[in-house]
Image 1 (tube, rainbow, N blue to C red):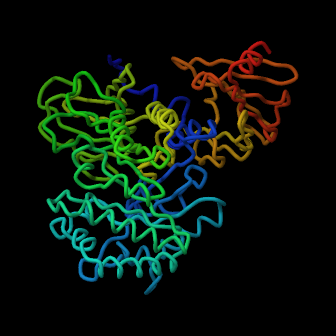
Image 2 (image 1 turned 135 degrees about the horizontal axis):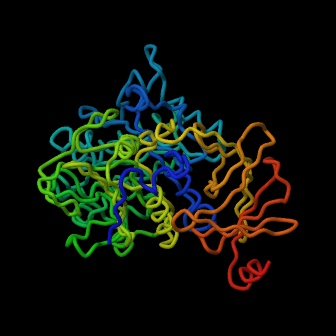
Image 3 (image 1 turned 135 degrees about the vertical axis):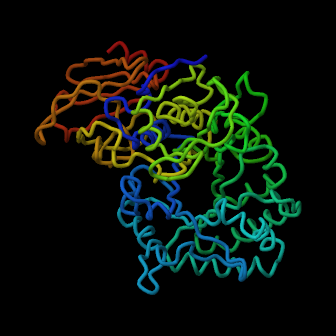
Length: 503
């Protein structure tokens, strides 16, 4: 069942919320529950530095409060030496007057305790190089593997990375069946060599059953990987003759394939991966198509890619910022009321499927319920990080964050509008606010509910507000309104919840 809305999507920028809320909603869902979903992996693509205008994104733009693990994408594999090297030496390194992005990236740890910075190796383009054979040659040779590992340890130490993320897309994808065994051996040898140095070893892996079954010895690599980042996106694209959502959460009656997040997670778990190591991928971009008929409901007949957007300039692929610009220009947004996939939007014969804030929240909730390690974002630089599509309002509130079994005390600084979140936890959506005119201004926080409605419970000498997105959570705050006072988020179960409700 779908609901069509013209123009602004209710899940897009409610009350001026910018794209940072996409991450905040994910983090809030996982963090406040205290278990089973504490990891937020954020990929940063170094080529975002070369974009212009509103799309330009640098290391200093990274909000350190959104992610637990930051991945610098990408280093590449030298096809001659079979060692790791910088993808963009002038940008990544300091040598010869370079910009030194690697060290700027790893220095972020000095600003935020607990963040891990890893170097991602590979990616689609690098994996394709050499007819897709380069990584196969590496993992097939014991001497090349050892040479790579020795050099990789020095490389990571030199630039201050906390570990390596393997992003080979994909073992055995280009026909070499031995990749499955060889990659598992490579992972084992890497982790064994990394352990004395305390390096993390993670991997971005395929979501589809066919690719996963051919390329991964799941029990073995799961034993040695610290995190397994499921690339639960790009399940559909211009390579298909139909326009369909590229990251559906669940299977749908109208689609016969098993390309969806739930199936991918279950496949990996059923085949030996611990749920506690799996990280669910959430895309911050959409796949666009040119329709070949008047049918807009996915899967709809398509003739190829959609046109490029003004920021990425890539056909068939649009950042969240580019999508929201289209939405604001009068595209029709259609929401799936069955919550099986994110929305899609269309105008004329142009069509795009994407995940909005609400779907990101649902996927975070799914990750928690499945006991996964957390969620992964591709990519943080595709967000509306400058609030181009928001209404530009600026509100600041203070929160304190301390996760415990029954409550979360929130502290930190929450910036809405042009500024990023500076606490690990988001707030309920403000439904009514006093104008922020000084440091003593205040806002009334309400939790979002269906159709934008909210719930508040007024308690003396404190206030208790029920969060309708998570029915067992309540917000409790002092009856004084200075923004420096702490708010507390309580989790109530069984009798505790009934007692809170009677208050």
